[in-house]
Length: 334
Image: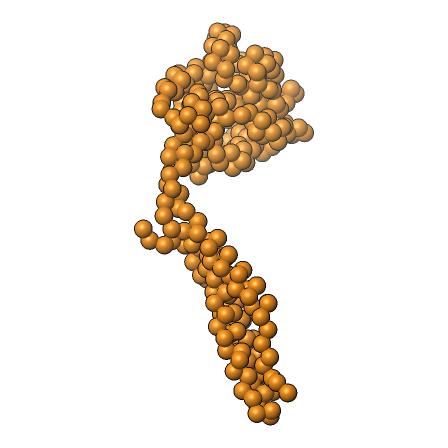
């Protein structure tokens, strides 16, 4: 086994060593210059110099973190799975939450992703149908890349249906983890805690949501809903960028935030409802709620850890420092 170091010497360490040598050599030359008129050499400082060089070197070695040998340690980690379900229906282009509902959501979700580096996150987009845009991953950069590309043109231009994204995630919830042989001192693995963050304006034109909600409640999957928009509503810009969407009668389509189904969904799954509008941003409250959800997944694996040996050079250096303090040398005698 080779000796390893936690840190390698850099310019700060080299500068400190040169600083010590410069001033200590200056002290030696000054002592010799004062001793010369008295016919003495001041050579008795030689062994002190060797002693001090030795314990300064040992202190430096301790700071660099020497490690020798490997020890097997069981490591237990706990985390949760967070699915981000984002509505990409045409109504998310409405500007009642400037610059638009979707653009504001993308900025807030990017901040959310950066807050959970130890958890797996996945992304589902939906309108009338649902699609997995990014599977569960620890790779924050990959998820942020997918978030940055979100636009309403990614999904067919149909009305919003809240059932498909919920059922899509339910279909991906695996069975409880099988029991494995673990060290007796550690608990057995538990199923992963799963949290859904549903971001939508709440306009649901799909089928009955209740059966899906009952399945979610039985699976202990918590749903946090984020209503985006205003109750006053807004017209929806046309995909061409000119004018607004119109209905079959030629009237401008107005989209409004509908909170009732989102509040009911959150309540029945032990989650919470939050809101995002031009005057009200409850994304910080959502972050706090997600932080309070304890990860139920406990995975145990064995890792090889290098044995720290910094204590030995540190202890020897302290002993030499004590020796240096206790023993005095008369450099110049009358």
